[in-house]
Image (tube, rainbow, N blue to C red; front, side, top):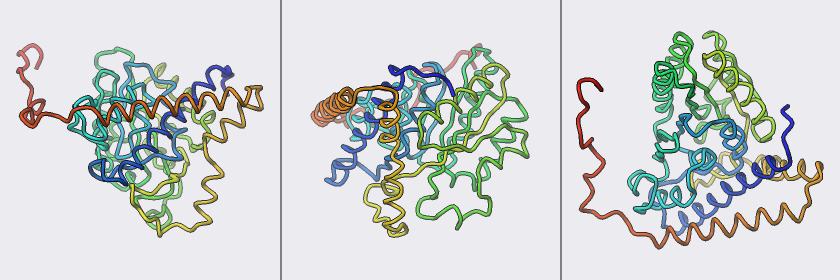
Length: 328
């Protein structure tokens, strides 16, 4: 495992809290009817986002699915603009037009989240292909759940990524459920990583609730992609402590299962590691308190921000200019 400094680990700790606290506000306001649609939270899965994205450059491309808040924040997008988008404000990353499940921040390499299960996989392959053709050293990373592996496009994308040696990192956040159905009930394949073997793709199954393990595995996979090209697949075994969406009663999970999940909280695990390495508990408490104030201020500001002007509803729907023959 890479020898990470206390300063780096503290930044990881800060990011984990940033995602957790922002999504806590999303949950509270969604319950109060202030968030359009049905937001999907990544509570308990934050280590995957932080561990992977810490190895990405600003120019690398990121694609996500319906549980995207943590990925976008970990990639470096402004939490205020992300939250403003979630509640439909004009200051949002998509000017309030995308919402929770359709976050895009092209200036930060976030080329899209989608509510269509597995719908992001082929798009990520396209971005990886473009990077390969340009030879600019960028890679693409795509996050998806284990339920997406039942879609044909998952296998089609694995095949094309392998055939064309695309610089693409597949990251499966396997939280054990495809919506409300456990892995055992919807698939005979226990480990998602085994799908990679027929296509000649390197793969690894790892503990997705330990940010250090995720970071190290992603560092090695991304380093290989940058040096040699070709795809990799990481299967991060994790747990969502919240429901499939805000409001999910979770009748399909026992109280014992949910209690066991909380014992594997990635924030608590990193805190214990930091303390064992000599980090003062008071400093860690200070990080959490500071991020709490930061997120509360961002949320308060976003709630006061203007909604998109209805007169601009057709803006950004079509390109304002056509590409020249040379660009086409």
